[in-house]
Length: 234
Image (cartoon, rainbow, N blue to C red; front, side, top):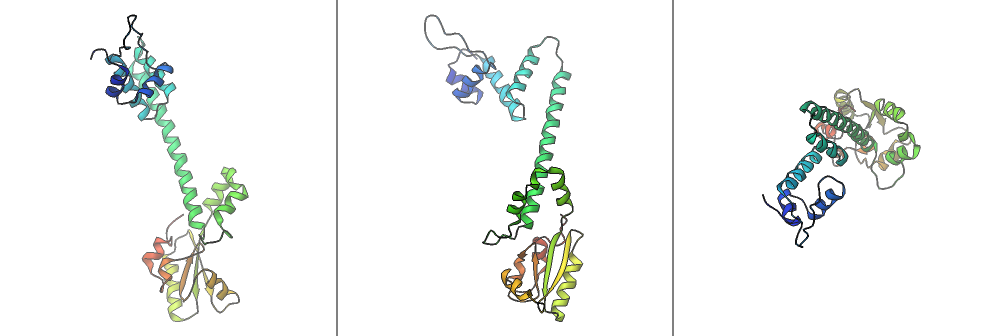
């Protein structure tokens, strides 16, 4: 591969011209001298190979500073593959720790989402309450709270045989993460609470403050209850 313009070299390497110039400014590739008689700076195949090396190293997570170290290692007379492997192992560990950290973040978010009633108003939004409490900055305490949290399952019942059967069905499907309670519609305040949650007929099941989809137009259905979290460990 002979001398190329910067545009040709960038295309061969699969990058934009500005990316190639950025690598020059960062000292990752050499900038060819400008010909004394005029004309374009001639980039060589070595520049293209070096840029491809940089891009591949970045693709697996190496920062530019670390890429520069790898390039220096590649040119070092006494370096061996063990030196490169050690850096790859260190990067692997770093990425693994980041993945674990993000997995914990996702788990916390999923629990917050499950606990939020999701109504039209902001009153009782457990997500906002969690953020406003400041407990999220206390990582150890937050993990303890999340670890000990329960999924609140309420069965609205009128005490009839059909309701009693639904209660037993829910209790049988519940797991240790589910805290099942029965709301007797004959008790004071039960009808008002049921109305706020959208309960129009019993038996009905409310999970973490939200009426299960299967109960919006009829009685409880186990497939929909499981989809809403019943029997699913936290």
